[in-house]
Length: 431
Ligand code: NAD
Image (spheres, rainbow, N blue to C red):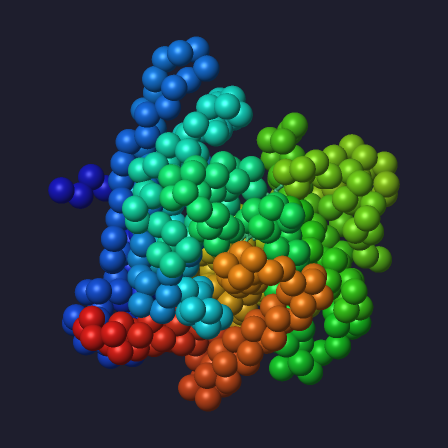
């Protein structure tokens, strides 16, 4: 029965709709469609945890393995009070496409625990991490499924999980998990990989458009890990960033910070907390104009980099994008709503879609896994050099297909990703 109310947003339905559109474009047969539109394996389990006060609380955890035809599954583990199995399914599916478009030999997975770490002591979080591993130990591992940090999980959580995994298996297996601290199996370059990767794709786009970085201005949403390193490399290439936007925890609102002559990255970093929140009072004192949260979108710039959250460019604000904008690089996952995306496509703005633009993170995680499995670690230059090569060749493949078939970049990226996964599934004789 239709209640007349809008349906709540379900990211798995969105992911399936996106897939269906590509499957139709590619003319995939029914069996392949059926296989790829749902996860191969899903684990949903209880995690009993002894709390500090002696009581036991039972948490719910999920691990979803969407597809591993091209290699072991890869994807983060999130802590979130509103985590759902459907969200994890969608994220696992998107990981499959991301790994495929950048052509790394991995499949897609994702995990989650319904919890709010703000209300858990560190000792309780440690027991929760160890409990998660005990439930999935038979189904994950360096050659099966390799987790990583994600929303509200960190290198510390990864180390606890690794320690539990190794204790159960009775051997050192640092390739079980990525996002580990440098010196304990982590990779140099991982911190900057996603933001730098975004800029590698911007650099290639500027070549396509016949623009010089020195002649471009950019406006960025977010001032966290992805945004800060994207700004850093863009400035090194000669670009100017005139505006950044982020969430103000104190005022519970987002602000945009503008300096038309260009923001000073070091100065802004010095007044930013570890969650990527800029101190608005100090920014004002330093001479930044403090504007509303959406103002980053309407700046007279050539480049927009949404690098905060999903669904930030939507049908109600897409018209605020200035006519000067030539390209959008999606640092965040899913920052553009489907209706806004149609407007951007119509306007002929060059779109570097999330699955390509922010794939530097998972690519570097793959490098960490390789280094961990070899127990031999590369220099930062080696990591970032390999990252550049990988992302540039992925960009070229997508851009060439887009040009040849007159496709929007997002569609071209999906076509390449789904074709590769479908082919691997066929080659294995699954379909
Ligand atoms: P982060 O937590 O370090 O930073 C998030 C930033 O977004 C902060 O500056 C925060 O203030 C800002 N923000 C939050 N709400 C906002 C709002 N309403 N308006 C404006 N700004 C707001 O996160 P991150 O690691 O930089 O990730 C950013 C995005 O990139 C996410 O979508 C994430 O899934 C995606 N991503 C991250 C990585 C990675 O390696 N970190 C890899 C791939 C994709």
